[in-house]
Picture 1: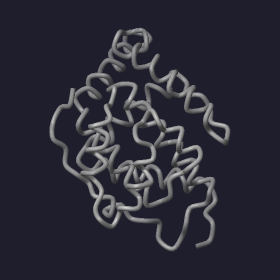
Picture 2 (picture 1 turned 120 degrees about the horizontal axis):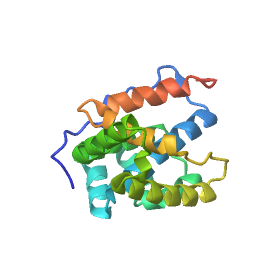
Picture 3 (picture 1 turned 90 degrees about the horizontal axis):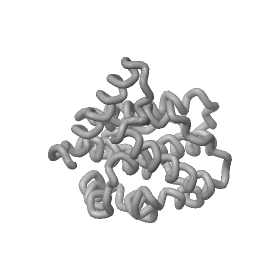
Picture 4 (picture 1 turned 45 degrees about the vertical axis):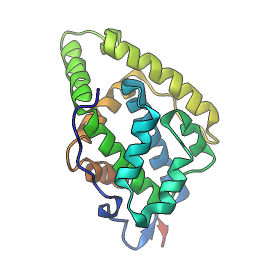
Length: 199
């Protein structure tokens, strides 16, 4: 269920890393991170094609038309394996970050309910993935992740149960009005643990 009309955070509001460009290893790491977030969002919400396309259109300005075309090749989170061949560049990543934040705002109520359920069951010493809501999510995510990893040209570690749950917590964190900047900041900080290539 879509909870409300979200605010749109334009990709142009996300600053590029000044004076430097990301290495292929950094771009791969960021792509995989975003892919996993999208797979988790799809596994939880059953995100449909119309909502996906509408979100792409709403967050993309004229200056990001080429980036939008690149992301449209994915068509839908179920088609994420396309990224194994056509890894997104930095401009396309900025659009995708804005799209993910936009979608998490739409599904914020469901994300909050899921995270609350995680916290409650863990406090009781139980496995959140044994509940009906999160059990269905976990099963769908395992299948999506398996299909995704088969299509990757590089080795990608399988999602653990802990990672599956942490992805939901991440998505809720990015559902705030400044969620796109939060996600962008996390990606850049994570990338900085790798070596920058001279610009």
